Image (cartoon, rainbow, N blue to C red; front, top):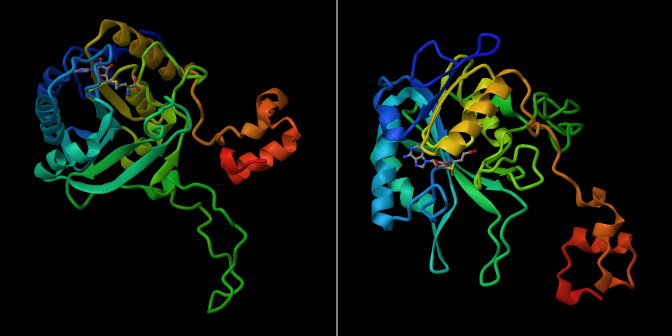
Length: 317
Ligand SMILES: C[S@@+](CC[C@H](N)C(=O)[O-])C[C@H]1O[C@@H](n2cnc3c(N)ncnc32)[C@H](O)[C@@H]1O
């Protein structure tokens, strides 16, 4: 405990942060019906990573269904579940997990409000298919009367100076001064080796991705739950906005990382990439990185122009 902040090991209504050291299905059993406002997670994708056992796909879905149905039970009416997933890959063939899991959520009576595309620019380079540069966040709600605070997550307008050119409002600014709806394609850098949040976990999601969901889908003091906590990101996003956070993690190494990150976040000491920081512009990477020797005849400025236009390599002269 430091400055009155403790991480509890089990759900308690007056706790601010809980890290359950064990299986999420055990943790969920201890939580009363309707106690949670937002469930947000990125589950194992059944790819045989160091933290998961590779299962037959039917068994994987069965296991996911078990966790999801408990998440629905603990979810408040009007609450949200955001399930962030990528692809299952079987012998080079991809199977999008959101397609497989949608029927599970729908079968439990939840309604999908958005399928958010999370686009990032770095990852594995594929040679027999296009490199994967997005995952999806399935956002479901329990009931139609759900909490959604759009004003909390508006982003700057493209043309804030635009005015109505006819009609009774002619000459007035046409956009919402609070900003525009961020849409359902979110460009957020993924946590790779040079990201300020990177730990030893192979599949961390960035705090800023979850902060946006926390801000839009919960009020201060609400509970945010992550059944597959990993390095504590969801609890961190909750604490940074005066919400409460609870999560379960099986592996001791990650429990240690999550607890120390949560502790640092609670004291405002955790380095995170801020939500409002623009995406890095390759133009700022410096001449050495921008200059392709095989395009030696062109100067770096010309090369940038080619890059910006997205001119395919085979047609570049
Ligand atoms: C994809 S990672 C989540 C990473 C997390 N979003 C983050 O930002 O660090 C999934 C995590 O779930 C954990 N896990 C797998 N099965 C679990 C279970 N039944 N109960 C609790 N945690 C589990 C794994 O050890 C792994 O760390």
